[in-house]
Length: 114
Length: 114
Image (cartoon, rainbow over all chains, first blue to last red; front, side, top):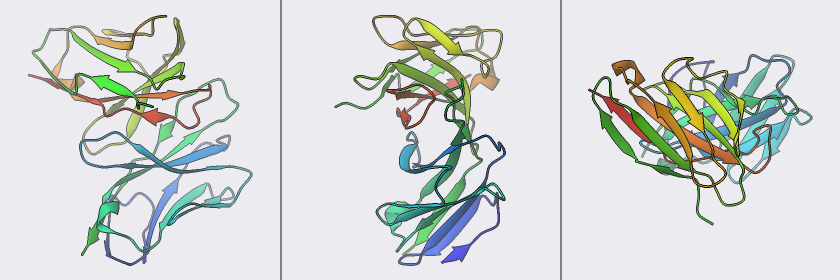
């Protein structure tokens, strides 16, 4: 796998390796976070979410880690496949706030080499 | 259960014309959100609506843009007197509950202003 710094726009990994995509969020009051996958020409697709009372949540081949101390979120994809190639966005929401909108990060483009 | 539907998928307008973008939320969802995405960027929140109510329009330009979600029918995002800078992908999302968690996105409308 390959760990990238924050806000790098692209990540290239070999098929079968693990991928780690990082995201920094800005609002200390944010208490709900989502990772979305967006393929070319399509809308964002929900991958996994986590609430601020958790540090880690696992799904199928994906894990989200939340570090509230440094306001950092990461998405780990195990055994990356060509179908994982897409742009990945983190989004934050202040659950319980009056606003329903999500605040999206800039996104990381993941390319999987066969 | 059909997902969020948007039409048209592609819309071409000349400067000064009007653009109307439609969004039908998922069945059972009464909350709709509109986002705009410029090329190579994340999604930016525009407006959040419930049936017959605008809840939050803090992300929408003050002029030329309006949105509605009538009691019957789809939500409409209307852009009057379009300019080239309005060219973007416009995404609609819906959720069953307020505060925005688990928003499900439509495929988007790609607006091109000539």
